[in-house]
Image (cartoon, rainbow, N blue to C red; front, side, top):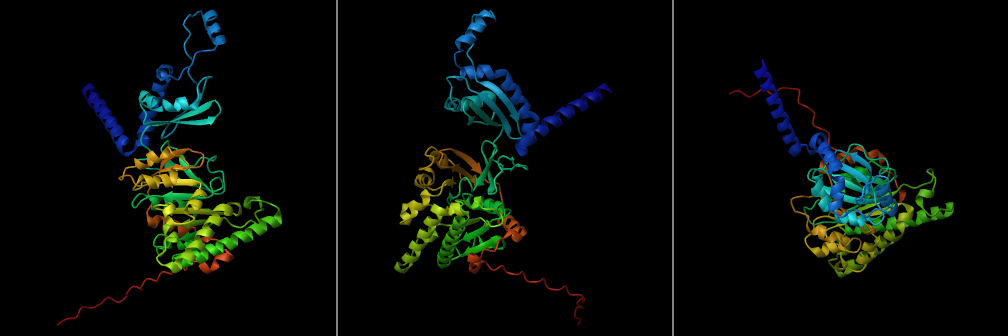
Amino acid sequence: MSDLATVIEGASALCAAGGLGYAKVRAPRVFWTVAGLPVARVRFSLTYRSTMDVCGLTVQPSRLRAFMVRNLARRQDVQPVPPKVRRVRGSSTGMRVTLRLPAGLEPADVAAASERLRHAWGVHSVHVVETKPGFVELRMTGYDVLRRVKMPRRMPRKLMSGPMVVPVALREDGSVFVRDYKKIPHGLTLGSNQSGKSMFQRNLIAGLAKLPVGLIGIDCKRGVEQRGYAPRLSALAVTPDEASALLEALVREMEGRFDLLSQHGVSDLWGLSAKVRPVPLVVLVDEVAELFLTAAKKDEDRRDRMVMHLVRLAQMARAVGIYLEICGQRFGSELGKGATMLRAQLTGRVVHRVNDKQTADMGLGDVAPEAVVAVTTIPPDRPGVAVAGDSSGGWSRIRTPMMSPAEAVAICREYAHLTPDVVALAPFRPVIPVPAPASAPVLVKPVPATK
């Protein structure tokens, strides 16, 4: 009987070890929650003071502290003071530690030692974020969260507090990257072919389709990318001529909304009451180069009008709830007059894998120069990985979850009832084809002919 129990215990141990090994590869969240987090928590508690000391993140104690140690504790050796641990929280992706910095340390000192802290505590990455003066948060990840992106089921309330917030991707520190149009009204997305730029746009459209906003598509590639979203679009332009007329109508809509703001004595769309507030509009431009490039001299006037309308929308439309989302493979001054002026108004920047360093400079060089090198290191076998930056100089690596075109189209059809009717955009409302009815089944069984 004892031999059987020994065999059962050995088999159970082998099964548990095999299950953990399988979970580490196929279900890293489960492995981290079951085994990785407890081990990392114990290692952090036991080695915190010594790790901070060898990493140079300690300061000499104050005179009062030294006096208390020598006279009350009766110790002659006064230890250096590390940052004080205020809070430790575990999650399904890693661990977050809030530190109170002593006098003499700054967040840059902790950020410079993040790589050494990563190796000391055996985690995948350590990111340092300043939460408020004197406090930093160490965001540790237990595994590569960008290898297989899985968005959290419940979004933090603080993150999703605004009316125009869309979760789009996952950051490399495990947090959610959102597109908040009230904070960053206009955005620019760059990337080469097969870089995941279309995946980013699908996730963005799928998130916007669930909000009470109007979506306007401009896809001069005959609508091959955006025509499937027609049930949720308030307007769609698939040729340069249609795009020119649509942009002109948007400018007129913008001017009409400014008149409405002036009548009510407010300076922003969100200052209006819900009864008179127009619906927000998001303009999605699939390939911006198609609006700038011309093949004949006669098309230059149309191009100049479109560029002028885009620049006016980028400069003023935020106040009236019209937002721009520009996508392209490259967006430099070589496109022509007005390109640099328009790009300067696009605050949010997301750059996927590009073909040359100059394209990365166009997207991030003027807002986060340090992120340009990170863009050039994105491997080609990881579509969807990008670097997101803004005018504050901060940047982070992100990756959008996998979403097929059929899934994005299905979401647009599901929320087609939220599509608003904008009078100024009625001529550009896409025609939704009605599916042909299935042929009726044949009820009479055919009789084979005989000789």
